[in-house]
Amino acid sequence: GAHPLGAPFEGWQGNILEVSYPPGVVSASHQHPGPTFGYVVRGRIRWAINGEPAKVLEAGQSFYEPMGSVHSTSANASDTEPATIAVVILGRAGEPLSKPATPPGK
Image (tube, rainbow, N blue to C red; front, side):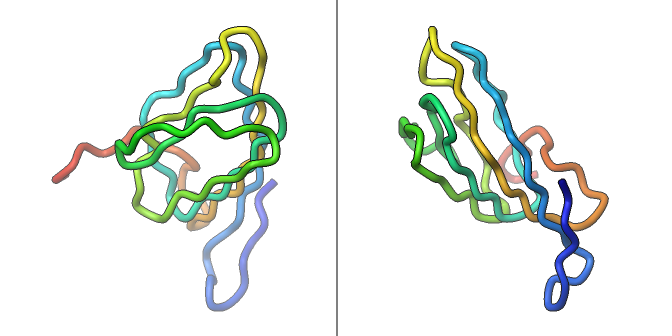
């Protein structure tokens, strides 16, 4: 669901969603409109921002993506077990929650 934020974040909202990764699934590099917080609910994911080396995060661990960062690695770390994350994405009302990553210098 989306939840409007008051001052000093007028016009922004917090969006809460669950993302499921079937075994072996990898997402393309992408960006979110604002700061993004994630929590691994079940399974294990490979995660990294800005081309850094990927980390494997397990159920109970969390991650943070600063505004303007590129979510460069987003994948299920298992070829046999599903994974689920809960995500809070902050952004201006009406903005898409995710878009393909913008190449550097664009």
